Image 1 (cartoon, rainbow, N blue to C red):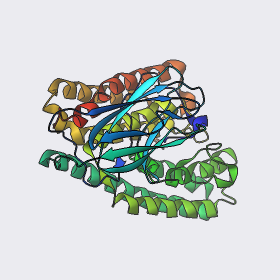
Image 2: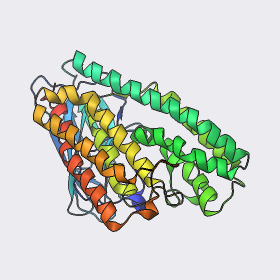
Image 3: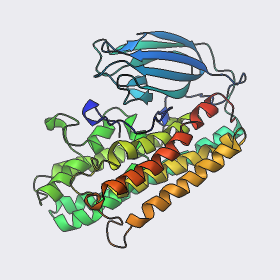
Image 4: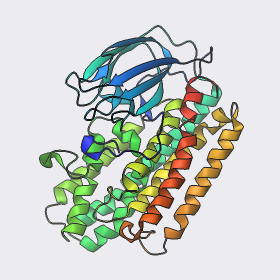
Length: 379
């Protein structure tokens, strides 16, 4: 998940075009009649975004960001409190980008942590065309996947919560991984809903101690403290938050380009926290999350692959092959016993290096997809 600066980890390979799945721009257009996208460039400074405000015509936009601060490291575009797109981990000297298609209106331009954090992005004019049938098919396919996994998340969280409330530590431990998998497959979608993702998935020190709850607070109690005492209210709130996520997903607006961006987002999750063992620091089931992130990334890519194949079938084939390579690299660590993988603490440095290299190879190619789609090259 996207975290506060304490969580930010530098990816080994630059993952250009990272962004979230969800858009509040109802009549989005993922193709451009001219085949061009407008480029907007920003520098991230200690003060915030430079320029502080910007104006652009409605349509496909490539946001290009240059890091020039050691403390302010991300650029976000928001509609109200909904994050439409972002690029993070941009420490000083690093560049990155993401793509969006925006309709007329005013959006918040945010560089988190800057002394002048929020600016305004003004989008003028009307979008020139509606989504093509191919784009609508891609969106419908991915929407079905989102709804299936949020439903599964609710289903799997209920018995986990029941075990925690009953104080059954062993049972709760055995059910924890099953609840985590569907969340990790579609994790970025929750990040666009204000504080919903931190409520579900924040780790210790990501948020103030008085606000910390969700999966990882319970994880710490079960594994580090060996008890579920005091966790009943936390578990009950977790279930309520998961059910809220399921309801919100049914109403989201999606863009094909953001689905492609989301495939990158999930690989960023692997590099930022699963490879390092930071995500599941008490249960050490990081490889379970690792595979779920890759599965979610693959489905997101496959949803938009027909759009890419029109312009670059070779790249599409290479990405398919690289997904297969990632799964083959992960196979040696799978086990028949619960939770299905060796614990992260059993991995050597050589193991984590091998896994990271497979992700980096895939991510480099996958990062080329959003820009192709947003400019209409794949449409």
